[in-house]
Image 1 (spheres, rainbow, N blue to C red):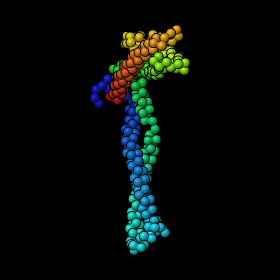
Image 2 (cartoon, rainbow, N blue to C red):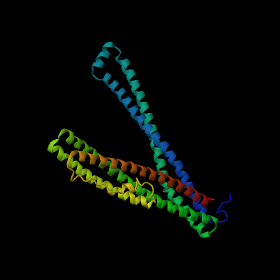
Image 3 (cartoon, rainbow, N blue to C red):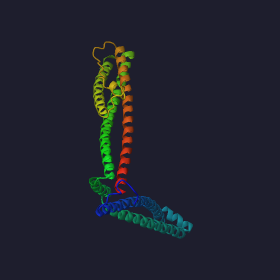
Length: 322
């Protein structure tokens, strides 16, 4: 056995046996999973071939039935004197199609039986990943209780793993908050675009009372959506703060937490309304770009955390198996 942090610790036979059995189960599961994929592919191909063969058989059977029935085809064949010859040929083609169907059916059934056998074997193995994790956990508990270099390695791995899992949870919450903020900003942007269109119509084409009513209704809805977006951005700022992101984006964080109120009361001219709408659209657009940047950074950090967690898991496993 090669030297390692745990090579000086005598491992009880029951731990080694449990690990060996669990590892064999994991390998068997991997092999059966690959076998299942092949069987499932064969079954799909078999069902497609069977369907094609049955269609061909139906066509050949219809040809035979047309010649056997009192049909124009039979009368014409009789007048030509070749009905029996043609009927014999059609029946031969029908029999050949029946053979193709039978062959396709047999292959399809064999693939289905193979799939059933593999599924039974997989069910019999049970949850091999949980079994493997339990075997590793049992040995880890024993090794850490025994002290030594391996115990120190495992303690370091466990501590770092716990920190990363906590960070992963925070990243997930920040990502969810960013998604909510992005949707809120998109809704506000849509309403502002619509309000801008009605405002332009009212300004340049004298839309009258109806246009003004629609415009003001759009403006009221846009204002509500901007309030909702602002709330979502405040929540996002809190989540980012939990990740230590205070300095990442005065535009992405600090700049987004200012209230995005657009007060449409006390606006006396159509030009003023149009300018307020344009300003709000610019702010929403900038906020949306900032949120997209937050989402990208959160996703990137999440991938880095996942990679480090995988490396720590591999280090832990290597330490326990050495």
